[in-house]
Image (cartoon, rainbow, N blue to C red; front, side, top):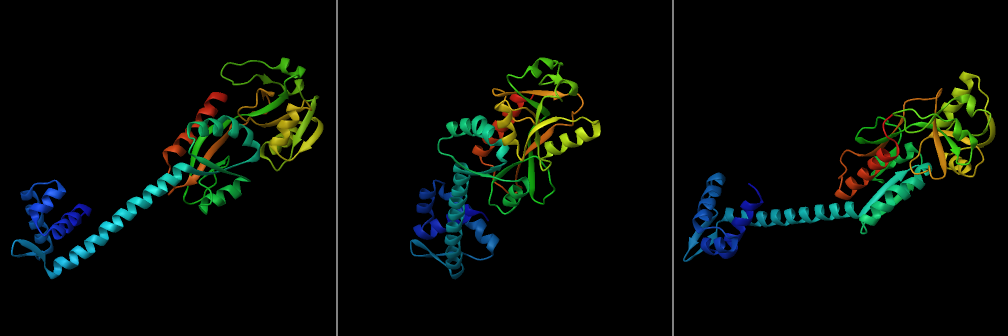
Length: 306
């Protein structure tokens, strides 16, 4: 049986007539009669008996209609609750990402997204990859932008794009003239000898890019001219923008108006993958699909395949 079956029987009971119920239900009297006969055959017992010119419920019919009304109410409540959940998912999005990506996400993704979706509110939480994934698991975050595809049961990782490891250079630096354009590469390529003696901003080994650069210097025997050490990518970018020196980190979209990127000939690991993580039972609403698409388009625009 489905909800329609219960609605039809309840309507017959309320109208005490098949012809009147058929008119209310917008079906023919013969079709409703056949329907009632089929239901009674399936149940193995009559639901109605005739009392004069009207239909009355049998004992089994009374029980059936009472339960049927409750089932109809529950179906209505279910549809209403799901509708509210979908509306909430469309209006409120809890998004987590790292501080280093905050500026470009705000400017290049959230600003156009919120302009196109004025009724949506995005709740932002910044923190480490591990902390963001824990919040997703606990359903305290809807989405988390992460760079590590850690195995966690029930978590989906949607690939947004990839970032190359780059040497970030102040826009007024003479080092920019040393770069060479190579077909298929998004940025000019530079050799270590052309930048290693310039002021260098060293990222902490706590960051992935900081660890890679330190290992590279140790393995190659190169000694950068370190003028500053910082713990996070955002501070590093601000230092490069201020003209303090060069720095190595994974390319961040939307920063080339304040600095330039170059690829390093000797230090060129596979690109860093960026994922949108969410629970496998999470309802991906139309608004969230649009948000994910904006992230993908940003990476395609900024970093072509190389």
